[in-house]
Each structure stands twice: as C-alpha cells, then as structure tokens.
Image 1 (cartoon, rainbow, N blue to C red):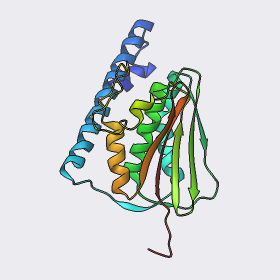
Image 2: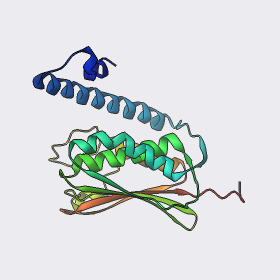
Image 3: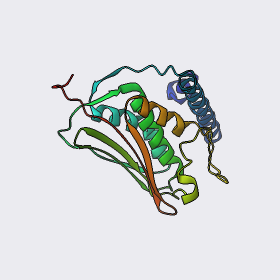
Image 4: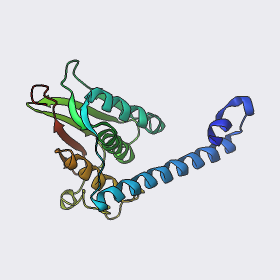
Length: 207
C-alpha cells in the first residue's frame, strides 16, 4: 500500500533515482510474496492435506486471471502474451484457485527465461474428455539431461542465474495430479519449452 501511495502523483513527484529504488523495493516485495506462497503451498503438499474445491469452471477464466497476473512482468521485458482460446469450450472440472496458480507460475517462469521482445504462446483446447492448457516460450530451453528432473522438489538447473526456490514446478505437479490431471514439458535446448497440463472436462451427464 505504501508503494502504491508513492506511485500516486498526488502525494508528490519522484525523481528517476527514487523511481528506480521504488521499483527495486517492489521487486523484492513480490519475490517475498512468491516465496511465502510457495512455502505455504508446500506445507499442504508435505502434510498430504491439499485442500481442493473441485467444481466446474470456465478455462477462459483461469487463463484470463493468469495472464492479467503476469502482465506487468511481461510489459517490463516487452514480451507479448499471445492467447489462443476457442469461443466454445467445455468447462473444466478443477480447483479454480490452484489451477490458476499453476498457470500463473508457468507463465511467470516463461517470462523469466524468455528474451526481451519475444512472444509467449498461451493456449487452451479440448481433446476428448480433457481440457489442455499450455505455455510455450522461445527462450533458452532445457538441456536434455535435466528435462526429467524439472518437476523434482528444490531442483534448479545447474548454472542458472535466475532466482527461484526450486519449488514452483514441484508444487504445480502436486496440485494438478491431486485433481486427477497430468503435467508435462517438451523442450528443445536453445529453442524454448512448452509446459502443459490437462484436467478433466466437466460432463454434466455424469455429475
């Protein structure tokens, strides 16, 4: 709230150095919030008490939330978030909050590892009784020897200069599998990665 007040010109103008320092404080605050969120989620995972509210929800709603949550970070690197979503798609049977958290995390990772002025593709589609979400970047990709380890808890690619706890993808895997879904990655080293997860489509004739 204090940062938001400082951004409001009604309380006074900031010079360029002050704006830079304020941006740094905002980055640190966001990083702490992300780490806290991951640790709280990991507590649910470790105790085996993942709290789910699985209900029919619009896949478009999940995508819109995740995209809006990452818009500022994408704009800072002049990255375009290009969304493909069909006009008519079945509802997905999912925990709205946790599924949106997973997609938000995947987009955030894609932004972190993408080059400036690039494009990130965010898609949702239906195949039979599954709703499939995917995030594709054109970043550095993942070396083949690390692809099978990327969802392991605390794993970070050796030599990576990007900050992180190594928990985000592990938590994402736990959240998706707890909902009866699957998460996976396809990556070409030097060309980018596609992370995807699938969840059951809602069938009103069964429930």
